[in-house]
Length: 102
Image 1 (cartoon, rainbow, N blue to C red):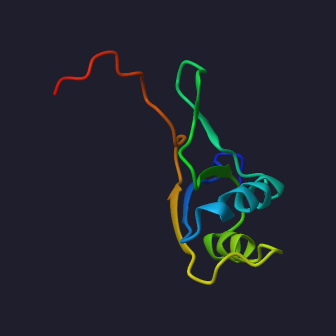
Image 2: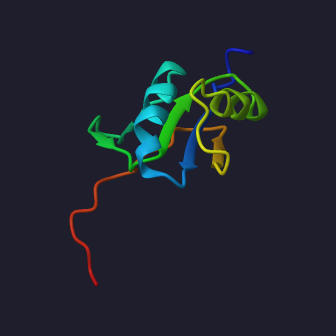
């Protein structure tokens, strides 16, 4: 990969039918170097919701999906995986929202 190219980053959302399986999924994703936090432009970290993960890697999207699906304890067969790729910048918060108007 050329120096001017950035390593792609991905947000992955995994939906499981059985809430009890998220603990095993978290362990599996951690072994694959996925993070459950993102960092804003000021260096503050935020915990992602259950089933949402973040990674910066040169692995291709099909390769990432294979790794996730190869969970050794066999998650339920009805797993939905959403993968979002960003080629530039970082996924995360741009700035904190100080006021919410409803």
